[in-house]
Length: 501
Image (cartoon, rainbow, N blue to C red; front, side, top):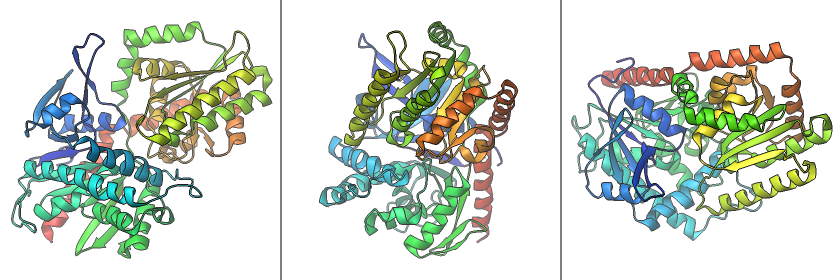
């Protein structure tokens, strides 16, 4: 099998689909690439091995397509997808997405709860788990089973699903695997968790019913996958602490119900070619010209979703402190922050946006002059502008509180043309690969981040070039193709092992 899954039917399931449907200003339907890095890497996977993509409907057009009850063909550029949409009603989806997945699970896995005050888990949260999250996961499972030919009878046996490989993705779908395995026991199941995996004590924030279901749900897979060895270790220890299971840490294996579940790390990366080519697009070059026309001597860039885990406010406070300590940089530097709107239906995110805007106003009022605004904040979804910023930065600032991987650190380094320096949080997944070639920071230490800015901006030219070249080499060597091939190879090996039992 190696780089392919041979004669196996492939089904991929993720909350979002590969494309987005919306109307242009004149009301004409437009199809664009789906948002987020997960869509990018799954698109690359389906280029290597065609299969079906199961997703939750996010737009009226997707709800309409879900109503057909059948997979649909979607074409965008040179890519063709077979997509099957599920369409929960609005109340059920809200419980699943806006109460349980975000913020409950997201906040636990990124250590974001202010435990002295939040969360308060009561009747409404338990109801959202039972009548939102579990319901939507059941709908995903039904769609997967329809594709693999699952037996409607609980405990179905035989060869149903024997030639099917189902790849589940992320924290939205922790309860899909048990239902698929129950009714199609021969199907091969892998689940990739693209966000951090918290240590055992933090999982105890959740009620026993939920935390045990999360671990048990993942263990219904044949392989559980993460981005880093650290998250693998956390998961293995959690299986001991939360479920009292036997694990073999050396073999990265959990023993459950007579089965051996592999737990593996596959650091996701990017396809450099798919960034370098678009970075030459006329829209990117036009954005770059506009950026360079207003450029000061130094440009610090961050590109992020407007998410609490990205640690945006502390980054601005660190920049403020840097200007206090090094006033010689005043009027000679700009901090360009390109932030994509995120989860604007979730109360915590609405409040965080207000706090970000307030922080920017305070720093610009304190440090700025009549013709210089130190922080240039743009809340927008503009990929050409992001690529233009990547090309032109002197410093790329990534100070996430916790991050499953953080592809920005890799994307920027591939596109940049100025031997820009990467400032990188030690709590990002990317740090395992890039930590030796960046200026590392503790995301909570504002003083250290301020000093890191000075180190990066005053670094000798030759050292900047060496570090930039080393990061490029790592990203080129560990491309998304390697990420896909490593998973396919382990799936093949696990299938062989399972057949021998």
